[in-house]
Image (tube, rainbow, N blue to C red; front, side, top):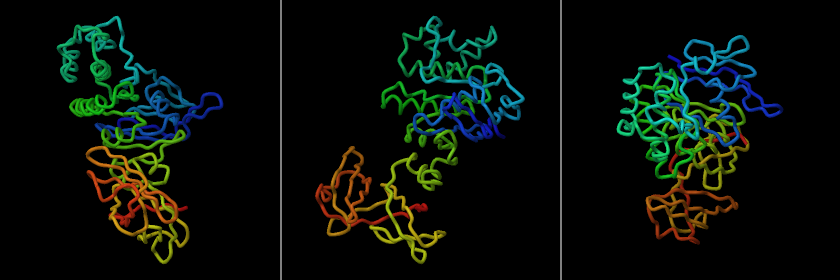
Length: 336
């Protein structure tokens, strides 16, 4: 069953087009990560879903109910949509219980305690927001959004105000809470790692429209375009020429099934490259060591660069070393 759908949604602010033919459908119980660069329209899309912005065209459905179109308009408070804002937007004059209870019918104390237990903040019910850590405040905001049992929860970059280590831990906790609540959620982020880690479904967005949707691993392995490949994970792009079903590149020939003879762009993920020391097609020009792995950059014969992700230290691949390059997985090909 579909919990939320946007069909051909358009939204402009004066001469600035924020959404242009935006299409996205969310299945019930799924956590969808909406990934895109800053300024691509992600937050506007979320605000249209929530009812804070009225679209200029298209329609939005929550379940089978049209909540926004040229002929229909349902205000935010009647859409059964919960919202977790980027700055959490807690009420500073209300304690934790008061924040979570806001918007619920009076006397719903049992539900307040349920969601506070869900986010493991039941011991902090009487604390004020300023007495909580950033991570705790974020969980209060999530509890408040879940309290009315919404059909969909929308999260607008909720971890952007947190440091990297806390952000990684908290996103795992939030995913567990949403799964335990059997909630349907749309999670907006510009962080590729976050999108891949948290979503059951990944929707990649650019310039006001969705470029591709699918399971995170499928979008990562088989991006529909170079634009998607650049937005999802790290990628190298090599020039290639297809002749008789093979694409010839500076690092060798690869299968080019389905591509006609001519120029192509070959996408190679950094982890699908093996390097061996010795005379070959490249030379190490840079390396960044991260402890568990390292990112090595090789300069190839044609002057192009190739980023390679390797596990652990490799003393044989010092800067200046000559290397042989071998692809360990079939690359993705795009028309040039």
